[in-house]
Length: 483
Image (cartoon, rainbow, N blue to C red):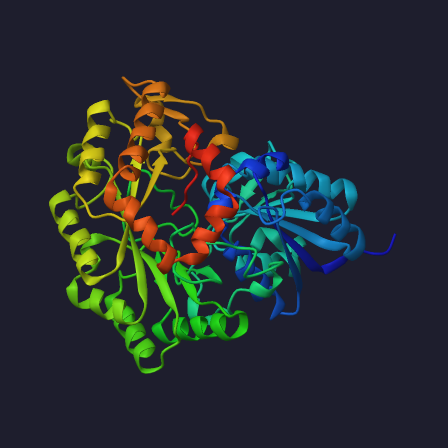
């Protein structure tokens, strides 16, 4: 056997469920987002002399395991790394063990929100991983590949110390300067951009993709995991962001971008500067973004509309003010309604992001949310099933608010793992279905989708192509629509 290459790494995005289930997974058909974190790490390593490749199991679920084995046998990387959410962590551990069987001597590491939240607790139970990486991964992965024997001095690493205990080296400070990073290695994502698809009816043009222009969030909501970036908030400058869009258009022919930032407009100055750049040097691209209601107004919305803003997502979460005030800051549902109407008046589509099953939820509070939804001119809807993720403020005391089945493989916001006190799983499921039915039975929503024949023909083509899957999805109400 030839020697393994210590300068080469395979970065893996685990699937998180049985590959055979991918055929009926409506999430993959409705929305397949590129693993931008891994693409960013790959480009960072490449410009520093390493060799990095990406295996996205979501893109090729039925052949992912075979692709993994073939890659390991042919190229013999010295390293394999995984980026895992809570629901995909167990699959990542399985693939790490498989990698060690196929290529003895390979070193394994895992990062992502689940690892950043639980750190040392994970290493003892999952020996397939040699290292766990906490927080931002670019520099940590590079340093670890350079000097694995010196891991005790590398910030952001969980490792086995000389006494046989899992030890965390501490957080990496300060956070990386985002404008110093190369653009993600999109070219290492097999089939990009056509392999990847934004949520159906959430864009006007294809090909399209997602882009991340900031890290972190300045707010503290009870249900959000902030383990990776903690309370920091950093963002790319307008000039960098314009160059990124320009690169996506000219290199890959991208026509529409979804900014997957938590707070796209939090820094108003950079959005004004970006709009000025896009107006003076048009790229003929459209975009979506997510904002908080207090960080948009008529002036900035008009600027964004002129340069291609097509849809804005708002995290409304609940239409019950008393419930919502327990979980997030600055609750004002009247103001939220005014902002939704203002966005619509500007000519930008609105996507409402709701959540069912928060601690304190009742049948009455869900019904208030449904009534609130009906009062708003919302075009698209996403309703998540509340999940208490490790790293979120609610996680530590979640059992005091109801019953919680901590089954990591099912913690993907697609099933009710947490049941609020006084409610049942059956009641939550029924209300969840009612939420979606209320939205889609509205005449204006049906007419809206008819209009998409003109405004988003690619979405209709996808819908018709996978009509059987969508009908089965509707019958079983197994919603996996993502932000």
